[in-house]
Image (cartoon, rainbow, N blue to C red; front, top):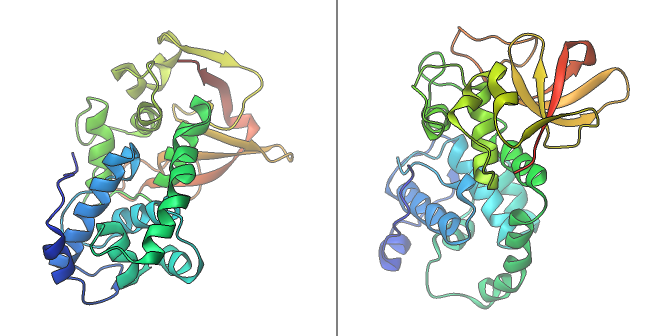
Length: 268
C-alpha cells in the first residue's frame, strides 16, 4: 500500500533543485511521491497512488501526469510531463509546496471540475479510466511479478506470481467503486457466477470481454472491421497471451471477434 504521509513543506522545497526524467532517483523523488500520494488520497483518486521508493519510474511518471491534468495544468508543463520530463514548477505543484504563487491559486479554480470529472460517470467509465491509466505497467524481475503487478494481485487477495488478467479487471472495478468484485474474479471461468455480473450482447466501453483462450480484458470499442479494441492485463504486445516469460504487461490490443467468447457487464 502506497504511503500517503506528506513531508513538511520546508523539507519538500529543500530538495527541489533539478528537473526529473525517467530513471532518476533520490530524496527529491521521494518527496514528490509523498506529495502525489497525499493528493491522490485527498482527492479520492487512489488509482494514482505510488510506492515511495525514491525512483522516478513509469508508475510515478504516470501518476504525475494525470494529477497535473486534474489540477488544471496545461501547456508546456503538461506536454513535458507526458514525455517523462517533470520541471521544478510541476514538482512544486504536486508537492503542494508553499508559498503558493498567484498562478498556483488560479489552478485551484480549475482543479475541482477536473477532479470531479475523474470521479463521476457510470461504473463502466470509471473502471475504464483506471484501466487506461494502467496501460504501460510491465512485469519486472520475473513472471507475474513487479511493483505494480504485485499491488494488483494483492489487492484482490491473490498470491504473487499468479496469472493476473482477472486480478487486473478486479483492480479497475474495485477502484471504480464496484461492489461486485470478489476473489472469484481471479478465475476467468468464474465471472458469471458472481452477483452483479451478467452477459451483454451490446458491449460498451468498460464492459468485460472474455476470450476463447482463458483470458479476460476490458472492451474499448468495435473497430468496425471484424476487430475490437481492448485493454488487457497480463498479456504481451502481440498474439493471444504470452504468460510464462516474465515480459507481460498492460496493453491496448486489437482482437479478432472470432476470439471473443462473451461480453460481461458489471452492474453494481
